[in-house]
Length: 420
Image 1: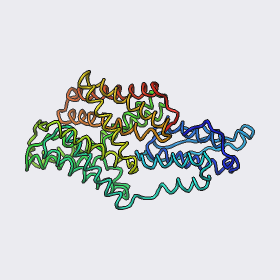
Image 2: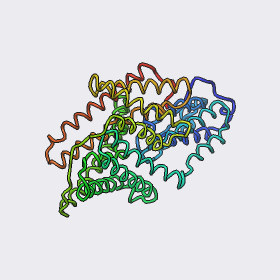
Image 3: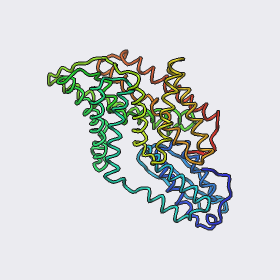
Image 4: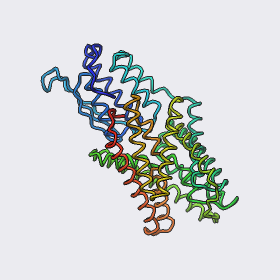
């Protein structure tokens, strides 16, 4: 969203209240679609300026404070403050792109203010049964493909995929059940662990923890951890701290669910057979990469026309991190991939005039440290010693530092002219 053009006559003639109402509606949409604090505040400020408003936004993962004033009035006259309580946002690239288009059309005068406001409200339409089924399929594909990326045996991949489908159905069911939604992470983790334990006890050995983590891959807060550290480094301390705490609480709930299932299995006398096996050839990993890129395009709700772009960004980030990581170490690979993806996203936003998040978000999704953080906590709980999780936690720290450094230097290499 650019702020260097003059304000169209239609916007200058709109009432003060109508302009504020549109900006507030847009801010709520950007928050709901997973925009980080620094980008949301920058976008809202830019739009407000084009609307002839002075706006001081303050955003955190569960709400916003927007203070407006009219520069044409005396100081203190007509000041308006909106305090908005919102649930944590979830990445929705399709609606984010559409909200960006609506705002650009209104600012350029191609769409009236009231028409644009109605178009934003129309984005709230439910996806319907078909959309829900597509999301459930995305959970299953993501879990199975992550198993393929880790080169697990076919049985492990199948168990992860089937459990992922069940978790996707559980997530859809929780939308209409607030009590279930509150405990969703723990319940989903219990389900994933129970399935893995039963299969390992009665069917064949499994890579137990790895299958559980693959099944839960969509619920892992790796992106939240990365965004939290990114917000902290950009000076948004309250938002970054809150997001970091939220990510940690999610990891704890997932670990608690797994621990409960393991404890019940022990009390029931189950003896699961555990193995450490990664027998798959290279083609399985690269095929799984394509499937996982498509799965995350579905889960991020990308528009059909944007699916190839989202898939290409996800695959490019993984390939760069893998190739450079094999040559110079994993942190170097993650840094290089994050640098490239961030610069590419900024270039896309600058020259195509669409949200760079279409490239940036999927480009780093396969590198975020959610699975490693959960593995470290599971090791600590299962072995009852802090030393057991040290290697995993150091890996999480290295990945986070490499990701954030890549994002920072990517923005320095090619600064963005848009905030989304």
